[in-house]
Image 1 (cartoon, helix red, strand yellow):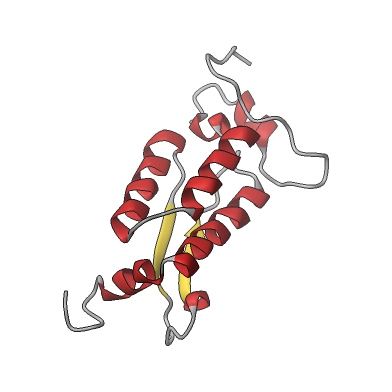
Image 2 (cartoon, helix red, strand yellow):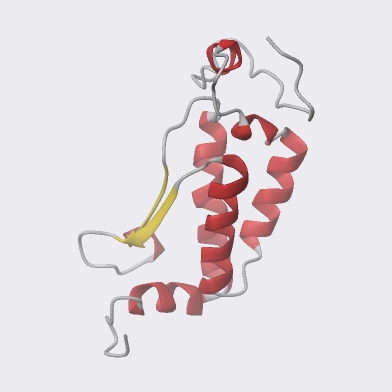
Length: 134
């Protein structure tokens, strides 16, 4: 394994995660951007996602996560009727090196933000003209 110019995430306890961290680090040409998400950085990211101010802020964070960490995030109304925030599908796509707990924490943080600011959910639902204003 070649030395990295930045700190990387520490290992999860054995059996607690299926992130395949060691296999990712062993690959010579692997995309290691996700390994930059240390536990401290993850806390900062989750705090930032819990305090979103608008849908454009959420889309900005979605782009930054893709750019800096290689993390793909899909956020859209679910296939059925959306009555609560649970009807909005927030999916962090599987990726080698991305901890299972992190994949669960990101949607939770975004939903908390939408609970605090329901206008984010309304804007998301209106992106395709649900309320008649595309």
